[in-house]
Length: 388
Figure 1 (cartoon, rainbow, N blue to C red):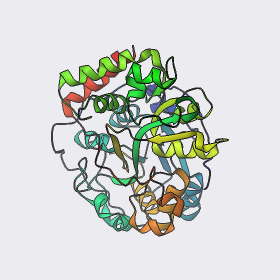
Figure 2 (cartoon, rainbow, N blue to C red; figure 1 turned 90 degrees about the vertical axis):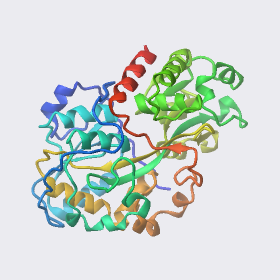
Figure 3 (cartoon, helix red, strand yellow; figure 1 turned 180 degrees about the horizontal axis):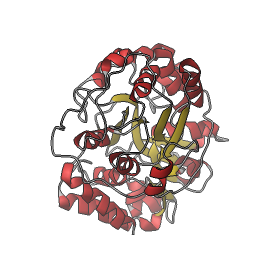
Figure 4 (tube, helix red, strand yellow; figure 1 turned 180 degrees about the vertical axis):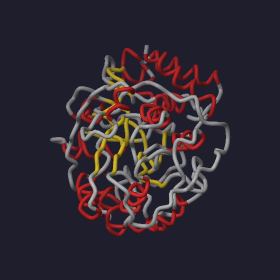
């Protein structure tokens, strides 16, 4: 199994500073607790924007990428630069809520972003991303049928193209809990269960993400993570608030490392990152990852182009490049997240395709996070309150 090279550069940068340096060559992580009150209820209806008049393989300048931390093989970037004679710069964010206001404000200078499912619908409603010119992305035909259309956040696939998908759950240090640990969110949220499995004190981390962390609490309580019921959300807020004594950090960047180094015993995070860290641990069998039995998040991250991207043709060409069968496989083999690319499957390492963490057999207890429209601000407010 190829091991991912870790390039952690943790920095908190104010949004205005990012706007001033968006196209710089440095890699910057942006960590904020802001949210969006944009979006609408039900299906997204946006005023259609003009489709960029780009041809397949066309470039119109260098590419400025705004992406999650450590989410693309650097060799893919180099290959794109070499093939098309352009340069690629990359800045990073650690939550959708950090990225969204920067793109919506305009003038960011970014050509390519990777928003998650529910954020795509918010960006569409706010007219913050432009339609995809499918003629300029012929490899879009490589998508699996379930990712080509009918995704709840962009049903016709007009504004986004799936990038990777995975799950959100818990990583656990079995040397602390024992091998018989139950697969439940109660390891964090139930003080009795936490005490039974040696998790008293600040042994846990939760994602610094309002929808994911409140979603985990909502699933533990038996509710949908997309609730718009104020009472249910308040129960989840109180649950997180009451867990403060067991939570060492709200972290969306280093949770996997904190688990393997022994600084935490149970951490909330994304499937692929745990696989990477477990593989690099002295004893991989010391750790496990699971989606708790109460259910969790199945997410899809997507490629999109900001409404005012300076180089939309280069962005279309980059999307098409990543949808190539072998390059799509390279992406999954590097970061251990599942590919939405049917053509890539024959090139994905067998141990990755057969890993149930990467490709879970049963997704019946999983939900996509959906845009809750005007209720979205309540998630952000509840999360800030719960953290204290």
